[in-house]
Image (tube, rainbow, N blue to C red; front, side, top):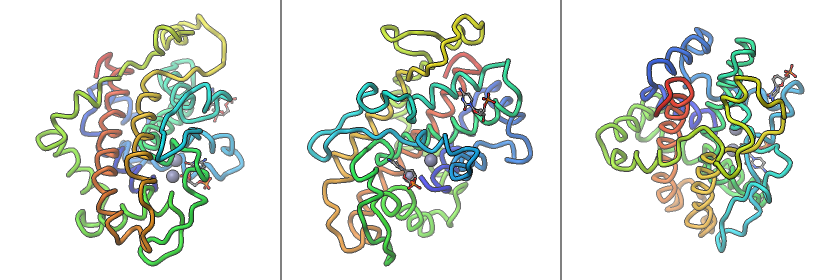
Length: 289
Ligand code: DCM
Ligand code: DCM
Ligand code: ZN
Ligand code: ZN
């Protein structure tokens, strides 16, 4: 996602935090980020081109070696065996954000990475290897030459409906999505959205738990992906087979029926990842969603 998509994920999450999670978020982010996951969410993209953070660039995606639109899948051994993808990044920062042996600054950094990566994992082209997640597929959006990744899902289509329907404001958009979660058409979906919310690894894959880390019981630094990020990645990757790559043959993707088809998917993915971000932090800081 571009900055708007990330901010909206963060603002949605702010509406659903439990007391201790909210209190950590506010004190950790401080006035620099208006004590909010909204303004803090784009930080990881702002730093990824800086030399000091170049190691974090591969953490924004997982290159799923599937074959859309015929066949979609994400496999951690096939697609993230090096441990440098968004699946292992979420595991790493989930451990670090609650690690009281780390500095305030390191825990804030971990929170900003979680804020960002739980957003990115919901973008179908961030869980796809084909043409570098669509970056190498040229496309036109609103008259400008760009690529499928940027133009369609990251920001091109969002920019158009944000202006037309949400006063060009991430806060206005986030309020609308939060309302749909609280009382609207998303309400009945929320329990499914949280069907995976444990911050632990699956039992058959357990090497260590967050509690082990806190207690210093395991020193192995290898980052094993957690169960839920894999569930979320598979869910957004499925859109590569059901929509994203199905019919891209429009002269302008952002002003055609491609955009009207993409909007409901984008809005649900942003709302859902915001809601999941809150639930994730609630489990970490308050013990339940
Ligand atoms: N870092 C990280 N994940 C780890 C260890 C370190 O993201 N598991 C980050 C935190 C700092 C940088 O790497 O930005 C350097 O950390 P350190 O000084 O702990 O090596
Ligand atoms: N990206 C991706 N998958 C890749 C490479 C990049 O999803 N294999 C994402 C990260 C950015 C965007 O595409 O959101 C542009 O990346 P870059 O600036 O590294 O070209
Ligand atoms: Zn992107
Ligand atoms: Zn990103």
